[in-house]
Length: 165
Image 1 (cartoon, rainbow, N blue to C red):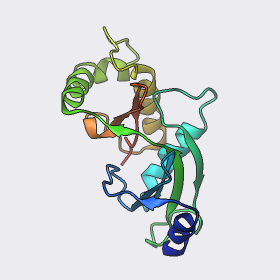
Image 2 (tube, rainbow, N blue to C red; image 1 turned 90 degrees about the horizontal axis):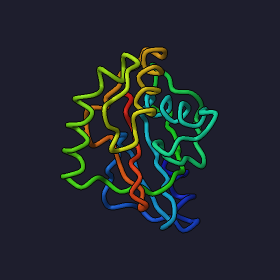
Image 3 (cartoon, helix red, strand yellow; image 1 turned 60 degrees about the horizontal axis):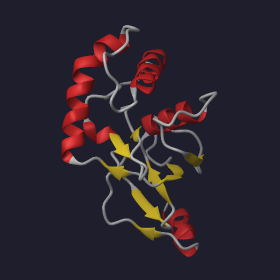
């Protein structure tokens, strides 16, 4: 993975000092995009889900490239890793994080059962609904209750970033 990271650094990317990602690993930026290097197989499932949407939804990050340089993840090895080039997002302010957590806790059961939330102040309801269905289909853990899994674009749009585990 280090040689791959070095290629990005050679091309003008610099290490980010604060890694707000839950996937661990290294994050680099060129000022316009970030690139994440991680060893989380559930993040790979999430990225595939986002990239395979027939119509991209604004509640998911814009992912420009995602690769597995050493091949698919394997339970018998911790060597495989993913490289994800995507838009830069900002962590939520504490007040927004608490408001999101209150909203999702009140509405996740309703949305998960196919109902409609009374309000959708973060414009995430459709994304939440799709993620719940996909997590059930893939038999993968889903954590939408943590505000850490929500970030924001500079335009103010809220984005679900890393909900699978």
